[in-house]
Every structure is written in C-alpha cells, then in structure tokens.
Image 1 (cartoon, helix red, strand yellow):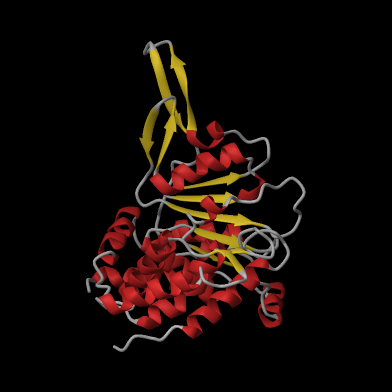
Image 2: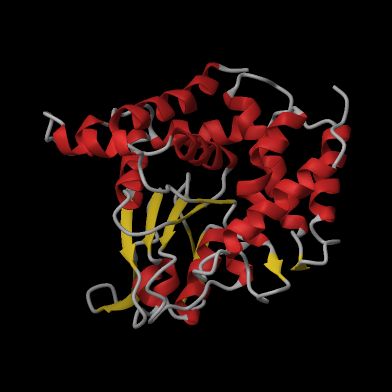
Length: 319
C-alpha cells in the first residue's frame, strides 16, 4: 500500500485526542469518508454531533458549510440560485451551502420532501441542478447529517431512497460517567476544535479515496457480501431488505477498512465488522412499514439486531 494509507489513521488520532466521543464512531466516520460515502448520525441533542463534523473538516483542511434544516427551507436555499446580472447581461449562478467539501446537515429530517429531494441529488450525483443546468460539487464531498430521534413534531421522516444514500449510520450514545466528569473538571477550557490538527489537504484526501478503490475484493468475499445482503430479504420480520446498492456500499467500506489497515485485499472480518452500520438503517421492518431510522420507537436497534443475527447465520469463507 502507499504511504497515503497512514493519513486516515492520523485523522482518527487527532479526532480522538480532541474530542470526547466514542472511538468506534470516529473509526466508522473515517472509513466512510475513505469509502466515498456519507454518514448519518442519529442521537439525542447535546452529545457533540455538530462539533464532531466540524473537527473532521478541520483535520482534512476542507471547506465546510453547515445547514440547519427547517420545514420552510426551499431547495434553492441548499443549491444556490441564478441571479440576473445587469453588468453581464445574463443570469449568474450563486452557489449555495452544498458547495463545500464537508457539509454538516443538521436535523436533516426537519426538511420538507422537496428540499430532501435536492439533497438526495447532491449526495448521489455529486452535482446540483438549477434552472436546467448542472453544477458539479467539490471533490472530496462528504455529508455528515444529523437527526434527533425525539421531538418528532415538525419533522419529515427520511424516505427510504434517501436513507439508502447514506453509506453508514451510527449513534454517539451518552458518554461514560468518567468521561462526563472529566468534561466538568477539565483545566483546559479551550474549544475542542482548537486541539484538532490539520492532517492533510482536501486534495490529498480525495486521492486517498481513489487509492482505496484499488483494494482487491476476491470472489469468495464478494459472494459472502451477497449472501448477507440477500439474507436480509428473506426474513419474516423485514418487509424490504437491503438493496443491491447496500452490497456495493458494504464492499466499498470493506475496501476502505483494508486500505486503512495497510492491506491490498479485503478479509471477511472487514465485512463482518461493518455489516451493521452499513445495512441496519436500510431495512424496512414489517412491523412498522418504515425504515430503521428516525422514528423514536427503537426501529434502528431492532434492525441492528436483525443484521447481527443474519451475519451469525452466514458461513464465513475460508481465507
């Protein structure tokens, strides 16, 4: 592997040093970034989701924007608009907040369906359409979206199609009692972002993604991924299982994990480790008719248990 494989580990290290959030969340976010996907953080308010996203952007020295979603937001508030310029005698496009390397989408489930549709195009196509013209988004492009599982008043559940565009989904959870006590008694009152070190440039970060795609995924491991994905479709407690896009996402994540570990090939352990955060939020449970995220009724926890059960039931290919 190239020397670039060490950059993701250094990104994770500076985030661990600066932030009081679970190491497994940091690791998952870094893998998701290297894999070229987007991350959905579902958790209660006040656990540091937005600070985490800002810290990630600082580590890669990328351009950042934050969008606070509200029910009255319009697509143009995200994409930007074309404004008539008398001096140039033509419409000039003014980019919106989607034009950044790291986009923090706070409380994304508060956006109305039309605005969510504009967000969907940006996440999936890496471009936006305004007045019949398409505008490419920066490279790298990484959306870290947050939503709260409470306060459902004034929210619009994310459609399954948009959930499927998030490569991974996880939650911070509350800090341990020890970690929370340290926050209260810390002598250093500087902002956590001040302790985040710049690890690489945005251009270097984009090249890391390209290198990770070169990792070999052997046919037995590919068959293993397919078996897991298909098994989620054959359960009585799941109305709609993981899509083919979910299998592609799991393969991309496994390649990224192997790349970060300095390997040129994917192991079955890469797949087993990442199956839950990649697949659980994509399942539509039969008992609710809703996807496994954002409904405040424990659907995500049940989906995670289902994926864990599926993985246990699939034979691991031999090395």
